[in-house]
Length: 226
Image (cartoon, rainbow, N blue to C red):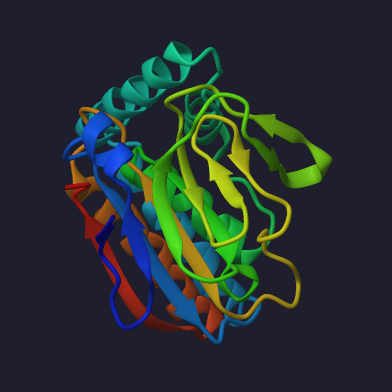
């Protein structure tokens, strides 16, 4: 098991992942002491600026190409990828509005053309492992859903449970809530997606949480899966 931990996160990449997905990156950023939006007017201006940038023809072409790679990867495992639908709605109607943490997650995805998850860091139990699922493992998904893994799916585990299945979704245990203060955003690549795009998207989320939620960046790292 290869250890890739830093002072702010304890992450291992399993031999099974390295063998099946060599060089396929994974990124994380941890933002501490976050609050609800502190400057609604400034946040709205920031959202509009990011939206204008992502809608530019050349930028949007790159985002669309990366989302197509995720879509093909999901379909190989028999699942629909949510990113194409999110992109279409964002181009037509702008970023969705939920709360600051979830908004930051959607903005990161759409601005970089990558898949991002947002989670309550304090609800993670122990160290994290990026791994490959065996057939028939079970994850208690968000909203009471039950995820049953397909052999070869990419999963993120803590020391007790699978907390996210790439092609199916994140778990209920670690979802962000109104009282979440320490927020972990993480992003999976799939074959063909370069790690630099994970860093770009996670940077968008980190900037939102620090500028408009008063948070502090504990770290941002992209691991190349080797």
